[in-house]
Amino acid sequence: MVSRIRLERIVERVKEELAELLLYGVSDPRLTGVYVTDVRIDRELSYADIYVSAIEGQQRAKEILEGLEHAQGYLRRELARTIELRVFPKLRFHWDPTPEKAERIEKLLATLREEETSEKETDDQKEQ
Image (cartoon, rainbow, N blue to C red):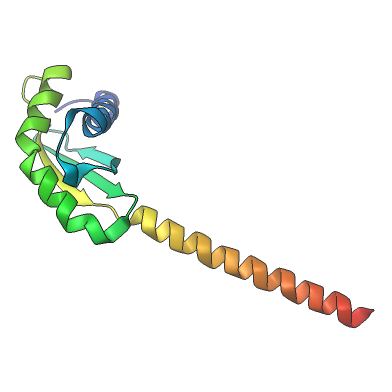
């Protein structure tokens, strides 16, 4: 087992290196526009859970996850080459719906603000 501080450093390094690999190192068209939202590695360094998302959202989730599974060996090998660990964790990819949920929440908040502004204007007009 590794210390919590070392684990955090490894997680950050994996996240940075993987993001760079997805941008410049992978030629699979299924993986264009993919970004890493989170990385979680267990304390034994056995598994790295990689959370990804894309600009297009949920529509491409299955296609992207299939592309990542296909490129898993290459990605793990490249990460192991740049991040020196005795044994590099196995990569498991997951879809992260958080960005889509955040966008939906932002839209709802904007709608509420618009309604509040229009109600305020209506109240101001009634007072005059």
